[in-house]
Length: 101
Image (cartoon, rainbow, N blue to C red; front, side, top):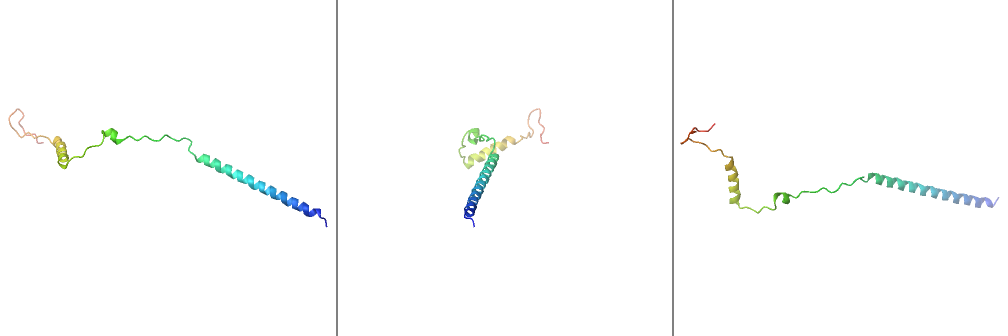
């Protein structure tokens, strides 16, 4: 029996453990680099400026005041009256024909 053989085996096991730890560390670093590269690839290359929104208050001239029911009905009737076609029912004048079509 040789006593040096046991110590040599212990040295080999220690050396093998160091190599394994080194290999695991390198794999972890490579994995981390790959994840960072993937995160960089997912980032947008250009961030557009925020979109401007036109205010409806600025374009309409502000906030409208409330109208009573009577005023709103009068406003509707004025709009309808503008659409009516006046009828010429005859009478005096050169063109006294009825203009119903």
